[in-house]
Length: 68
Image (cartoon, rainbow, N blue to C red; front, side):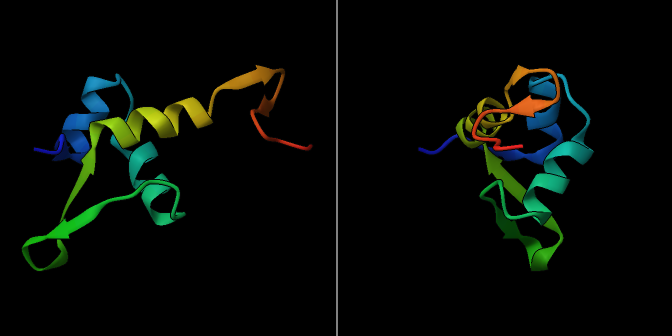
């Protein structure tokens, strides 16, 4: 069984504001499913962890994979 959870629950587990996850979903960076007529979102905890790792900084103001 997959580790699907509510966005707010995932955010709390990773000690972050839910807005960060909602923004990542909106930008297409975080896979999700929409339930209950489109109002309820679920994310995989493992996907949130992978997304967080992709946001990991490697120096002042830079993220991995950033060419800036």
